[in-house]
Amino acid sequence: MNDFKPLCPTVDQRIRESFAAQSMMTTLGANMMHVAAGATEIHAPILPGSRQQHGFAHAGLTFAIADSAAGYAALSVMPADHEVLTTEMKINLLAPGKGELLIAHGKVIKPGRRLVIVQADVFARNDGKDIHIAMLTGTMIPLAPV
Image 1 (cartoon, rainbow, N blue to C red):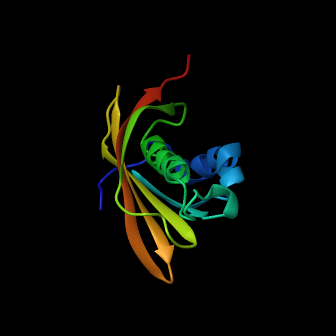
Image 2: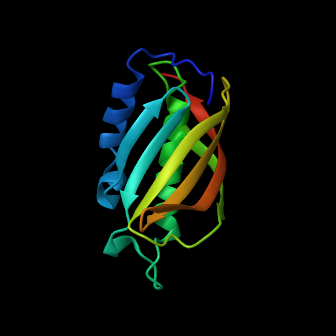
């Protein structure tokens, strides 16, 4: 659990509207399931078009939803007029993405005015069991209005 406070009173609505505008997430069939100050959760089905040659979820799917989960976690602690961009992201693939659904949990590790350190954990749901398949750590940069 974190102690982050949202700086924007409409953070949930703002993040869900921004997420809905991401055509990549629409293409992947991803849904924003949970928004809180400093944390988000995204679900994406493992569709036939997002599998690799062995039938597992492609690492690109894993990375895409984790990057968005981490980025929106960072945005959730920003002022209403700010945006964020990923400046770097490291992925550790822990297990194959086997199953029917990927679940990405994004969270803020350390918020800052210049950099926000984030983490995302991705799980594959297979026959009702969630297996930890990836861990990402990264840095987001807040973008103030110009």
